[in-house]
Image 1: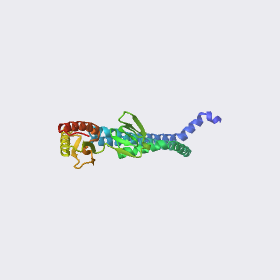
Image 2: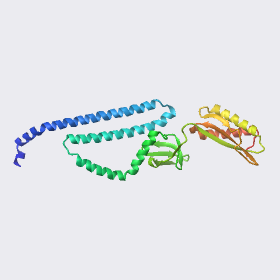
Image 3: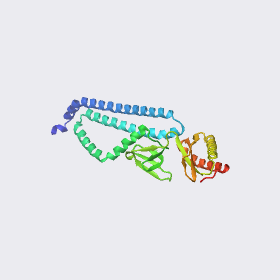
Image 4: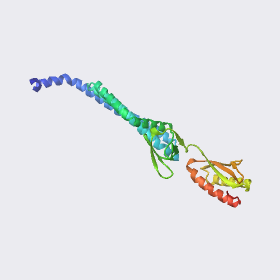
Length: 277
């Protein structure tokens, strides 16, 4: 014990371990530098892929996809950074001469316990990852999920926020989403039935609907596509006939076009003296 308080002891100890300490410090420094460089390169690659994807988009499509791609980039960057940090920590401990087997055993047991308690969270994150990767829906899309229908207001890796037509905000866990009906992909068929008395002239009614379809196609050229009128009657009875008007429209303008269509059909029927039942 007395030797511990003598200069000779510490000089001998320093000379014995100085070389190994310097070597360990050098290894740790290399590991840290390599970790920082790799993390920077990974972020640059992910950011470059995001910018390349955004460069091909414009307008509403850019707005809808931007949040999805940014959420995906954030998730991938965080996952890669965590993995790199974990590997770097293990390598640093090994370089410092610390036995990591007990630490790994403890971490495995703790991770197993946390995993059982966080199964719902893990399921939400994995489901959110596939929603983003598969582009099932995006911000601004009108969707039906279960009994909830509305516009997607926010899409995160764990949750989806939907605002319905009444203004109510629903927050859904991505892991609970099993079936999605996306009304905003491609063209949507706007179909409206008009009931007229059996004594009304069907040919005049069709002609009036064709005129309305033509005017709608001219005035709303970006949203109103291929107007048409059903050649046959949708429904007949002893008192009424039902004619169906349909056209391909953009989903975002569906409600507005329906209101405008009804207004113009009413005016056209009044002009041609075609009563509505």
